[in-house]
Amino acid sequence: MSDDRKPVKSLAKGWASRTFSSAKVAASFGRVAAKQALNQARNILDEDDESGDFLADRLDEMKGLALKMGQSASFMDGGLPPKIREKLARLQSEARPMEWSAAEQVLQEAYGAGPDDVFEEFERTPFAAASIGQVHRARYAGRSVAVKLQYPGVSDTIGVDVGNIRKLSRFASLFTSVDGPAMVQELADRLREECDYRLEGANQQMFQRLFQDDRRVIIPGVEGPLCRKMVLVSDFAPGRTFQRFKEEAPQADRNSAGVLLFEFAMRAIFRHGVYNGDPHPGNYLFGEGQVAFLDYGCVRRFDQPFIDTWKRFARAILDNDFAQWKEAFTAAGFVGSPKFDYERQWHDIHHLYEPMLTPNFQFTPEYSEKSWRVLLRDSPNLLYTTMPPAWLFVNRLQWGLYTILGHLHAQGDFRGVFRSVVDGPIELAIPVEPVGV
Image (cartoon, rainbow, N blue to C red; front, top):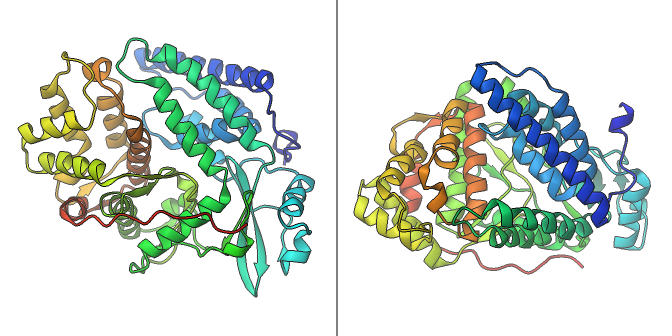
């Protein structure tokens, strides 16, 4: 491990230090975007990865929201050059951990005792480290468990980071119909929930109940009595990482896993009105015919009117009913100007729904990139489209899921899965109470 990869002693939490770091990261992203645009104009493939190293290191140091944004950028086709995304990919599960002394202090404050007094065994070196915490392997009651510890002070960084983004959003949305500050507030609300591991534990138990009838889905059990605001203890889930699975598994297995990832997300949304809004490759482990779904910190709930509108919107596209779609699209709150071009949007949305309209569709990175470009970059409706806050994480789920399926080159009956959940009943998940102490 090089000096740059040594454990983190403490996080920069103050306004000045984080604003300065954010400015450096933003400037670097700006240079990357400008260079990418220039290279595309010249038809040049960018092979420079120095910016990727810089961005990965700075985001890793900042943790919290900054690192989470780096995780998303690392695998989203159509955003950054491949070399940059390759460097950012380590942020998915190999971020720099905190020093053991800091981790031990989290345990001491949570339990009033050291790890050896609570657990039968406790590995000092974490096996995963990500945006707001790191995960250690331990033994409890004769079983292997995963103990997630939150970085000390990470919750204090959210207000600063969100405040900086909120200021930028006011300028970024000046010439659009998007309510930037409202979207940032939605982001802040979800992130603050994510910093309470007791709520995450309850969400994890909820998803376990919702999918208990599907033997393909593995959701680790939660040791409720051991959970604290900054400590989450759950069963240890074995399996191959996304990268290993993508490289080693035969295409038939990747197809099956891809259909399951898609079905899990669609069933959670359209039947139960909930979904996990953090779909990045580090949150999945792959077994034999099974997938373990990890990390339930960022869960969004929808009420029945929202799901009803979304189903009406989806059915109209599946049935090629333009008039019904137009009515549902407007009811969903997307239209922000009389200049909105419904005909163009109808054309563009069909590209997004192509997997649900095409028999035996195969996802590819090229399809994911084109979807992103058609709807989020090239559409003339961008100036006239609003983005209700509830849809912020829907977009995150949508593009994240498409990108993951594209990397797997997953092929299957996505149309049949989607039609089934859209036409099926709604059984909203019961609200949960935090677990632990």
